[in-house]
Amino acid sequence: MAETGAGLGPELAALGCAALVDAMGRVHGHRSHVLPLVSPEPGSHLFGPAATISYMPYRDDVEQTSETFADFFYRAVGDSPAGKVLVLSSGGYPEVSHGGGTKLSRAANHGLAGVLADGRLRDFGRLEEYGFSTWCRGESVRWGGDTVMPYAAGVTVEFGGVCVVPGDYVFADASGAVVIPRRSLTRVVEAAHRVDIEDAGSVEAIRTEKNPLSGRRRGHEHDPS
Image (cartoon, rainbow, N blue to C red):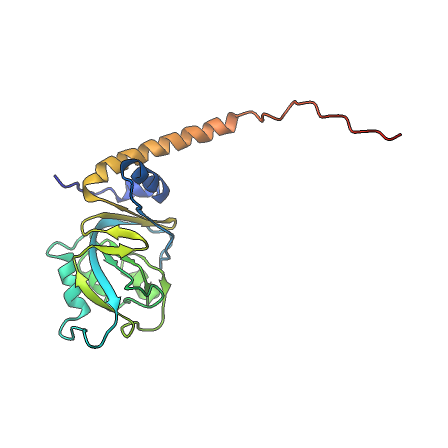
């Protein structure tokens, strides 16, 4: 049976991204971590199942002009969008805008947990007002539709060197992001708690450890007199 992450956000926020990445290393052998991103609200965290849109480099001869970002958005989130994380791949251009306050207002309208973009986004001020968490490569002021285009929805995508399958759980905070397979969520969270306990024990042991060099006699310096 598929795992459910309902209500886990605060618990994972308390654990933090690093503990979850360490836990993923114990449960799985593949890369799961994304290096730090930026956010209109750097103190926020993002958690939920991934709803994916794949971007590709723009080509005027293959652009499907009858389809808009809205078409891809609704195919990605399906008929139960609340609580999901909209994941946008880079299309090979992480430095250009993949969306902004207008297109992404749909995420607020339908109760998504937030947006995770492997590219830049526009309108940080507006995104901050929407009430969901946003993490991306940075802010942009220029439209990027002549460089990248949405190409497919609800498909497996590459994000910062990590494979993201629709339905994977995504957690992001100021230290980075981690992608957790849906069926492994319970095991990963349990392992993260063990990591947290072990780290606390290590800190306590280090606090009381003795300096192995203290108390040793120093050699006498040569006196030339």
